[in-house]
Image 1 (spheres, rainbow, N blue to C red):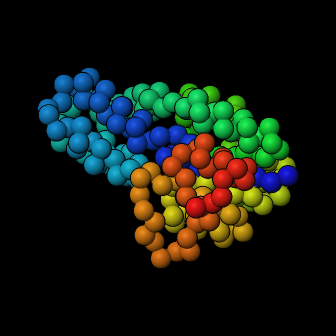
Image 2: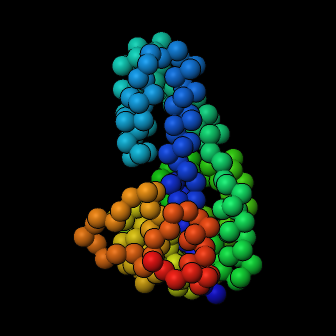
Length: 216
Ligand SMILES: [Mg+2]
């Protein structure tokens, strides 16, 4: 039984849109000045900025009258609620599993990532979830991919789909998986070996995995 492993942020779920939506609400709630939304999006660094650093900056810059910890606590409730899982992606994953594929989420991040799967219902659409902080292994290391296949009760053969060249594509290649790069409108410009295929969204990636379209 083959596996189809998917990255979470900006692959299965549109993290960019979710963060932007959260930031709009935060700006409204705090009546922040024009330009604050762009400041938040830049400070977020596509999710790579540690959250305590992000909120310390936001707190100081906009002179917010609550402790940073309170901002963090609210973020952990409000931000996951901004995620949604598109119906077309849900249908595509169901088609993949109906065809005999085991599907797993492989994501780098804190245990908090699980909240996004709960809120969107995505958790019910996959066979396994591996969050790096819980597994103790981070993409591109082999361990997290091995664990994902183990949790699926499957061999580690099949595909890895993700938007990060260094984490998803290099990691997938390192354990012998074929790879699909989730483009997000970008062009591959890394020195690493190219992915086997590129896809604009989850349904497109699934069509490639099922052999309905040629990789390209
Ligand atoms: Mg990602």
